[in-house]
Length: 565
Image: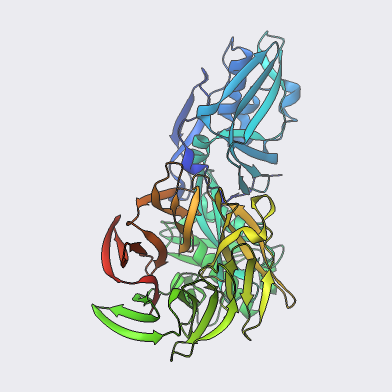
């Protein structure tokens, strides 16, 4: 089984890339990667084979360092194994990621044990699961002397250990695109591409053909017909044109499906810096689509865009029971609710606005054309609401769980498959991404808050939040989250230093940007261009700030900002 692309939820690993690995006398060297795709030309690991007279501990250390070099099917790493073991060892059953600065090596006779703090694990299908804080990884190796009196590993479990620094050097992160089950909107997935001579373009297309991440597979789909392969096994990029030739299975797709798979492909490959257009063929023959030229770009598939509407830059704020718009220094009163409000969020086409009363006990909805607020749900501690693409509202009532307001205003419970992260009644906020499929949640046990991402799974009979997985390890408490882009989540919260901070967490590589937050920061919002805004309460003042290159500029008074076009 080959190691497929590493899932884009490899978070926390790349962000913790301090040391390069376990100290060893078998030094690791670095050389330039050579491939047909210039986007993959960067430093890669080239390990040294064992040298004469190495001790058992040095052999194990050298082996672990060599595991960062996958070339020739981990050929250098296999040289540290006894001849009878080298062929049996399978490195592709999974990867465990450790923090290099915590490594402890214990040697006893012909056995060596390596233990360290575990940051996460990558499955044989390339999917990452972050480890809970405090988790340890431990591996034991048995050694024997060969005929020349040199120590070699006689017994090593399948899979490999990599330091976070090794992963940082060995993988690159990209978004990759699938579809919702109706083929109406692209859904963003996140993958790490191993550094290899096949190139990033080839790796990304192979990932499209493999299908979405497991947590998305029940709710997202690939438009490529089953069995579709790359005819020539690679995707060359020449003068900015990615040339993709597929097998004949693709001809079995109807026009709608062909257009969908083309959108998937073009949106995915367009994220490579050296790709300006995509040319698709089938066994050497042109792949013809009506009203689409031979060189396809993102502009051809803009109607499937998973990116928020860039024209939504008009700020709207809450002032007690009033909602006021603010544009070009001009204020306009838009709505007057029957009660003071805490939150307000428009649906995807701005035709309706869901609000929450200041006492957080009622959800009220109004049409955007007039102030005809009606109560659609009640609770005890209601969070900021969030809309899906079909006009349904979701919110959490902390201690009671997640609720869904259907289009007919009926209400139903949404079970949350939280697994080891917590329980349904511990969800204190839920936020749906712009694609309407992925969802971010905050769970709290009263001591520690956790931010996780999953998916919305719907049938006629029920709606569930499935596939939740933690996306970071450092935030201890969360005040609010928002999707800052299709590939990142912003959070107001605190870390172990107990400082109030704004975290912007990338779902591509797990790295978090941290910013100081305005005093009294309470709520987050983001405009169509991705610019973050914070509403803060400082004494009697309620103020909205806009982020500008890491600093904050006061925009107007009010709370709970949202954006319309």
